[in-house]
Length: 303
Image (cartoon, rainbow, N blue to C red; front, side, top):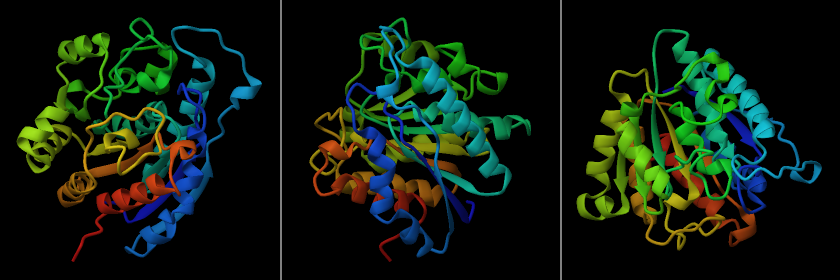
């Protein structure tokens, strides 16, 4: 695991249906991510924020992929940045912003390894599958599409960043914690053969068994994997600051255990925290929880 962290904020709310998630990167910084990661022994470089258009300046009446051009432009900027960080031997730590940011994050990481004849996997922790397409979406919100895009299903401006697709092989994708999915997503999960661990499976098998299988999937034949944590993976009792809360999520300790297993495995090449919306939070609780979970993924332990 790289010992230099590059923090990249993405104040993106164009992909979401509710405003406020663009303030997520600031909330995580206020919660002290940089200083607390440095206390673990990392060199920390804060690279500031990727430019994202303000929704007040835009008009978009699409029912299928809202603000597509602007999201694609920001995704390309982010992809360039994450690729550059890896090229310098660092690890991108991306702070969102709605989950459409993962298109840019993973595209850059994938491109870096693609150029070297290698590939990456994904650990995707989320209440939702994020596998809609413009043809299946009810809302047109792109934050419900990024995982499909990364597997080559979606608008070309998102799937073809750096002129290759897919960015990740479905057999190297582990989707963990889902409990609210749409019919089109259910069909695509089965069609692509994505390994999806539902909330029921979490209950029945426990987080350790799930993470061990998920890490095997994401690392099988890859150079490493991207870990993306949506706030709504966590039960809203512990992290209320999200615009799409779904009861029945991971507990505080289950969430930490998932991140601790990532650290134990050692194959993570990039890390992301998405969908933090301070408008719905309580005294920055979800940012504080997020920082603690990111630190667990980076190796913080109880002893």
